[in-house]
Image (tube, rainbow, N blue to C red; front, side):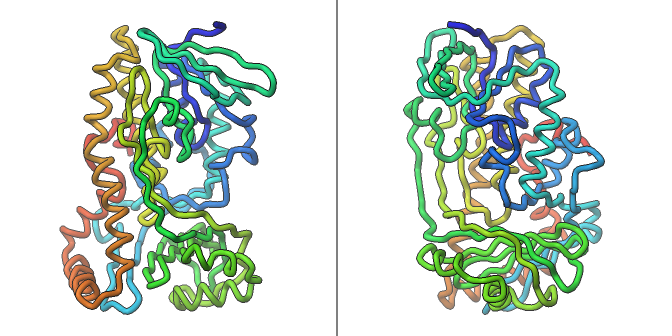
Length: 403
């Protein structure tokens, strides 16, 4: 045994790093164990995706000092939602709803860079990297974790273990927590491209029979693209040259943003839902994709995981200020209670939307069109819908509420 900690975070991706930063200076002995060296090109979650950050996430990351003047945040001020073959569309405008913005768009790689810069400035955090968790042994007063670095293994003892190690979480598996999975039989191609007309803060979500297409503003005339295709068609789409790929995007999306050009590197991501059957065990808790992996439709994945981290950090800071045990069963029960509503509503919304928008039977087409019409005509409905999408649902953390 060579280390005693209050909190051990396993997983240094976007959510794990955010949690570690939120706990810096809290009066707790905290370590972040990362499977790879802390370099942006090595972290699998610091990839080519473009993240639509809800305003609650933007607020919190600003408050944590993650964003600085160099962070290329593109404000998200307008959203256009439509379904090919249906009547009508929903248009959300932040200014019309009395809001500054719905959030912002940022490449995952740039968020990773910002998190690494902020981690470098943490005063009390211990970073263990590279270190792969290979065994867990729960005890009455701690969890003992074996962390492997090449040929050597160290044992770490922590009063609370946090699994932030992604969709295929070792921590979740080692704790014996089951997972409910659903394969959407789709893959998402994630890339960037240039638009003929500047998006100027406008994001599009376009639904088609073959899957959704999202276009996100990145500033000037550069845009982030998420193109979903049936998994059976992913190899063909992945082999297309730039011109053929752009033609496919136009066929699916249309010409609302003018002509597309200069697509970037692209790779398919299989789309599946994975929900942990519970998010806590003795002196252990799951956050982010280890707790729930959702369809990227509606851009809720990272935002939901960040809300996990913020709520947990808030509870742990309260425990530290009173000298309470960070792994206490009562604290973990309060975490589950605070996160239950948001987790259930967000995962259900994501899954229901995929199923509703992907079905082309006539009664559903009529229902969708009526729903679009009702939402488009009601400012009250629009504002409530927007605020939930901005992350202001349930028991929000104090950091998320800071403007």
